[in-house]
Each structure stands twice: as structure tokens, then as C-alpha cells.
Image (cartoon, rainbow, N blue to C red; front, side, top):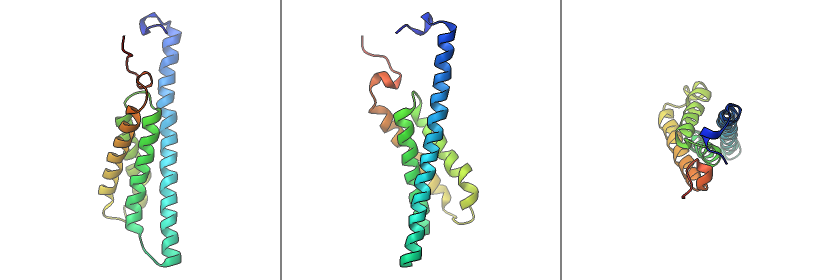
Length: 144
């Protein structure tokens, strides 16, 4: 493959569009997967409460946010070309504060530690997923 200096303006533009599309597309997939995991965990907690009269609402909120962070970090770490950690952290914060914050602020006073845990877990899973990828897929240089 040619170096970036040898590429035509059209080819460089194609690479820029691909990189932006990569981040936006996989970010949407990661957010959707995180929301799905959270909905599933909260529904299971509801079933525990309904069928066995065991209330695990607070723990289920915390666990669902942490699992959502793990899913978001895993998807981002395995699919994003560069800067997997900051992107996963930003998406976890978006998921916890913007998408779910207004829904849960009245229910739980301890939501901030849960969102912080989601943020940290997302970054750790993203960095772990990014490191196990081959060097060529991490945007690094191959040894000469």
C-alpha cells in the first residue's frame, strides 16, 4: 500500500470518510448493545421481584450499568481503528448520563458511582480488546 503522501486527494478523502464512518457506526452499535444488555438485566430483576418477591432493584441497576459498560467497551475495543479507550469512555458516559440519567435520577441516589463504574469498565474492556488485535489493525506500524 502507498504511504499517505503518495495518495491522491480522492483516496485521502475516502480514508477520512471511512474513519469517521467506522467510529460513528460502531459507536451506534455499541450503544444499542449496551442498552439491550441493560434492558435484559432490568427485566430479569423485575421477574425476580414479581415471581419470587426478591427485590434486587438497586443491585440490578448497578449491575446493568456495569455490564452495559463491558459490552460497550468490548465492541469499541474490537472494532474502532484508534483511540478505543477515550471513545468507549465517552460512550459509557453518554449512555449513563444522557440516555439513562433522566429516567433513573429519581429512583436511585447512588447512580453516580454506578455510572463511574460503567465508565471505568468500558475503558478497561476497550483497551483490553484493542490490545489483542493484530498490530496492523491497531493503526500501528509493522516492524521493518
